[in-house]
Image (cartoon, rainbow, N blue to C red):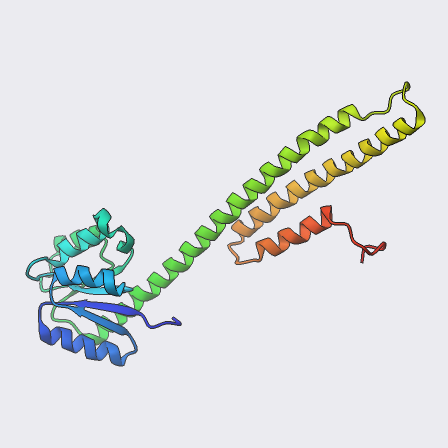
Length: 241
């Protein structure tokens, strides 16, 4: 990760806070601490951690209560995606299941091995980074689809008046030569425009589909611009170079 991961340690035992504060700082993490659940919630808002190391059994607010508030309370909806590793002296399966159902990412039973804790911290942070990257991709694909739909809708709106022009610009035997030539010119250019619009619509649809299905981080707007120039922007060079 390019930036230091931010870890909030929540424990009512000062020696545990001191230990993790020192060790995690040495490992390059940015650390904040809280000695109970109420302070933990305040620090979440102030510090905005990437990960919370959260003791379960604490005064004022337990680890479960803090987790429930962060994951379910609308007041903390901005922070519901923060990863949580729960510490507990209780090695009970139902206890762990409850934690995972609340949204805890991992569960460590006391007494713990520090090397194991670090391994789990890194695993949770790695999963969080992957999640964030996937979320960015999903949002980008949603934006591409929305933009593509808007472009296609605009092209459809352009096509309708062109079709009307085509239907009304056919030369008539009653027209003089000048008017007939003009109608023929308008009809030809309108037909070319309709063909270009239809080809452009197909290319936009394929481009959008390929961008999403390939799951790549391509330059959609650059490719779109190239297709606009291909169909609608005339080159100054008569040879098209």
